[in-house]
Image (cartoon, rainbow, N blue to C red; front, side, top):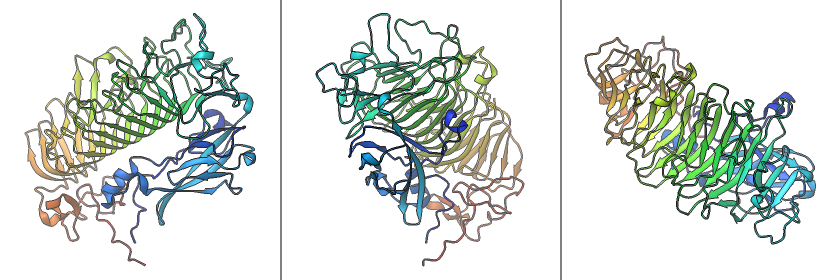
Length: 599
């Protein structure tokens, strides 16, 4: 029987995503958020419970399986004793007995791969009071009243006044578009503080039966987005960091909406601007090609306000397809992102998802795939505390890229490239898979303390370069990495303080500057940079590994690598999640325990 307990990638969301107000009031913990109006009807859809898209990629790599989207099953385990809700084979929640939905529910949903391998996620289904709902139905002909029985047709028909008046939503209200429709609409949303305190949420979402509503921008002639959040180019307003330093983008939630674009010109669905707190973007999808360079989401800095604060926002379960350039660009900081799937078949596209110019961007769980790429900027590090974890990258060029951007000159120290890095990254078939770093003209910001931890490389024999440490990088850490069939590691002369430890590097380590090598097995050593070599082994020998010829660099029983590493490095687990032994193995793989016998 296979023991999956050492596999560390979660199946689904388990993080607490309560709002600040919910934490303060000690409200129940939940991991996924849904809404449902008080006047819902039997059969109304609530939303789809999500597994993490990157999970299957890492699981297949670890266990040599072929798990895909259809492999996961769903079951409501608690919070539904009256059977008011149901869940489909694909994870879609629905209300079956609307009369029993009398208060907000917390449903525990179990997502399972096998009988012995599953994980639970807690789903909050918020009951929206009727008086807080504004309904839209693109098929109605009359003016409407915004109720379920008499909905408005579109936001812009009813809320966007003549100059200079602009309706930007009302705190506490839920604006809901009908499911199963294609709609041409656009909105502008602001939610300023009320007497210095955070306002109730403004929420944009979906109602009724069927798939998410699709906002179609194909006939948009004025480049208006579906939603401008905050101060993002609101005509007739003069909101700046000077006139409103507290920001106007607080407690805004957009969820369960798809956008589409099949027209010509530049269009992108969302622009988020000015600073604010508590914003949430959940289960959003962009289904077709976007040519605008900032793609599906542009979360932007406000000019001249770099030092005044940062947007605080959660992005959860975001899908994009065929963005020509960047699908999602986080120009602002204070971002937490969880679960992305970004695919593109557009030739010569850029990276689909990346932090940009502001610090404090924490991104986890991403499945990023590109058909053919020759100009990618990679998942970038441009400032302090840019963190990427559990990313699967396929088909990109410079997969991971600390990027010295000239725009940071003169900004404060938090815009330096420091205390940032990559952890648990699976690189599949990238052509120049890692490049640190690129210098965009003269800039005083140099990479300091960047880490590459638990990086696993496969299908990259055509790569033209390996892990390249360059551009005056200082104190770079390369730890618990398998460089696979790539060329290896190159440490350029203008760098200092590089440490390579507990790595498996079948190719070369080229030290053109001093670099310390610890507990590492490698093919060849090149360069005149020097540096200590501690408890390491070279060259590789077939007897060391399970199957060196086929690229399986896990240690074989009886390998001289086992127990030969220095125990002074305090690491909890190896590249695959196995616990490190008191006397660990040289390389990135610990000798795994024998499998338990089949019952």
